Length: 178
Image 1 (cartoon, rainbow, N blue to C red):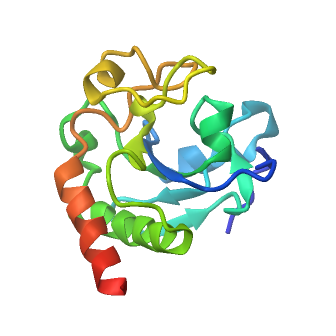
Image 2 (image 1 turned 135 degrees about the vertical axis):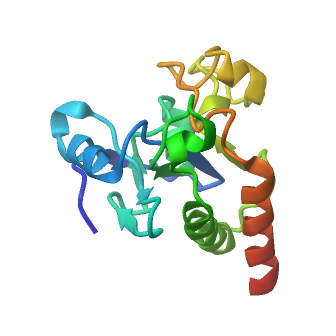
């Protein structure tokens, strides 16, 4: 637990989604940014690549500022991962260890809140609409092209994130927990 000051109230909103991000860097850098009130950004969890270590920075009951879209922030849990969206294998950070640790975390969150294990409920920052009036997810192609990703048009975790592998790991874990 390393507290970020950057969070707000969910205003009674139900947690419906899990948003997958990459840090465009490493865990120490992300922690440093998320601990600064002036940055106005945060995430609920961070996952380290080399050993799968997870740091919680915002309580799940609170609204972390991660998606660049207030409505999605209030209805989701944000998970940041070490890596770089435009580099193959996230620049070497998208490891089996990272995928497995993150999938266990996502599994626990999905199980806790009854979130369906599909890409309509577990998606990337790149899938968040840029228009604050829209609640319709964007395709991966539009997100990678920078047409979505919240108000700042983020494209993470990018085309090198292995969604097939990740969702299979999450699905296996959720099915085993039933």
